[in-house]
Amino acid sequence: MPRYFVEEYNISNLIIDNDNFHHLKTVNRVKIGEEVELFFNDVTYKVKITKINKDNLIFEIIDQFYYDTEFNFKVTIMQGYPKGDKLEEIIKHSTELGVYEIIPVIMDRTIVKIDDSKKQAKINRLNTIAKEAAKQSRRNYIPKINDIKKITEIDSNLYNVKIFAYEAECTNSDKKFLNIINSIKENDNVIIAIGPEGGFSNEEAKYLIDKGFIPVSLGKRILRTETAGLYCLSAIGAIKE
Amino acid sequence: MPRYFVEEYNISNLIIDNDNFHHLKTVNRVKIGEEVELFFNDVTYKVKITKINKDNLIFEIIDQFYYDTEFNFKVTIMQGYPKGDKLEEIIKHSTELGVYEIIPVIMDRTIVKIDDSKKQAKINRLNTIAKEAAKQSRRNYIPKINDIKKITEIDSNLYNVKIFAYEAECTNSDKKFLNIINSIKENDNVIIAIGPEGGFSNEEAKYLIDKGFIPVSLGKRILRTETAGLYCLSAIGAIKE
Image (cartoon, rainbow over all chains, first blue to last red; front, side, top):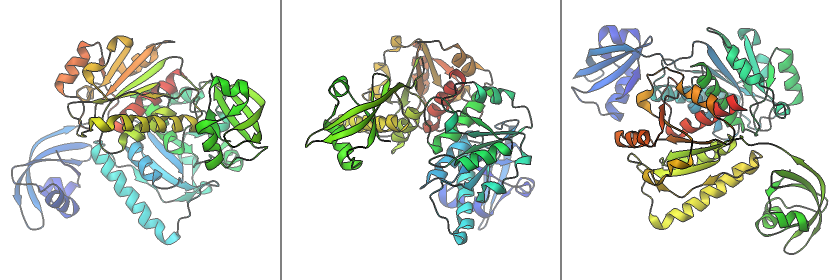
């Protein structure tokens, strides 16, 4: 069943308009009598289309229910800007896996050059990808893709659990990562920093440690940058949900 | 440093030949004096190239060491054959995350039609992808991509821990999956069955339960078929390593 994020006035006025209207009409080719799911403020409304106007759809509410799809804490991924379209894949997977926010960061070993004039369009497109992925995985919350930043622009005071994946730690077989996951509490703000291809530079590692980030090993094998975040989110999900 | 899986005679005769020779010569354009890593029987050999012949390379061993990159149990993914090139992505990610074997299975909701005459070429290509991914993530073991099978062709007696990801279980918030991971012991043979897009049919779910597979929920959100296996492997890695 198609599912749309709507606003308060859509529910109170029983109306679907703007982008959702166009998507339902042109992509789903919705007809009178068909059912659609609308989502607002943690509640899913099952509605039936009763009228199709030129610029909007009218519906009646058949049922409403509350699905809890979110962690009871927030996980932000600080992602070293990767090559190619990997960031899109990271956003799709991370959204399914419950991420709260992704901050793309230009790091020392980032290869991609992004023209300042194109940054905003890029971020808008990435936010659209997050929105579509949130729909597909029935998330209550659409993860935010933050503006492209430098590592020094991250306000580390916003987070109370701070880790970074550091390859130099990979021979280390302690259970630090597992212990940190186990210690996450309700309402915690977790940030996980992942380097781009090639990982963090020594200077970045020093900077992060200085800001209170704990270096952790993500298992015995070398993970690609596009896999590291998924590994963390999956582990957090399996252990904390 | 380039890294190659070799056989016993390569190490005992200090020679690199065949595919590895061609790859080193044409792709890496290796020169005399350069160092390469060779891998055989759980040991990594750091070697220096001393001579380049027409059909082979001669080397001397500089160092050798043992990296343990494997789980002390085996995890097989029985993967419902997905659309497009998703299987390639699944193989890359799963190899990084420690999978032992992947069995692509044509299931009731598999959409792709694979011509019998093309199956072997397809499997050969997928095994090459696994080999490259194993190299990149420095695995000691190259995961095997099995032939494309039907669900009834899987010998469930080979496995002593059997689970399948079943969406109907997703409202269920018990800790079954976590408990099963925690219970995995050394030398266990684990199999995780993942449906294609749309999941398992009711008949398949019944069949799997009949064969001793336990239905588990993979968290609160709907995961795509290409994410479900990674979620399981990541969780197993984080908890058991």
